Length: 81
Image (cartoon, rainbow, N blue to C red; front, side, top):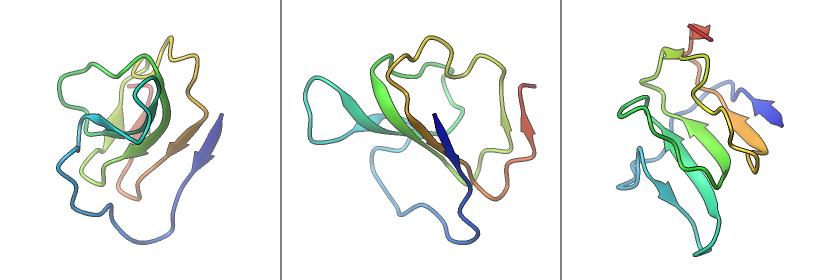
């Protein structure tokens, strides 16, 4: 799994924040993680962490076997809380 930390910028306004979106109907290509609801799609491949997220719990992406990349935000201060 790749972890990326962009040095600047924010995620674009997107009506799918906190939900999966992509062009495929069988695999979730991108999921914007907002920390709300605590449920992440099992078939997600790529995660973008919303800039509002400051902490990601220990098992946030547990069991997500297809997950290949997580892009972290600049405001993130704690992983595995």
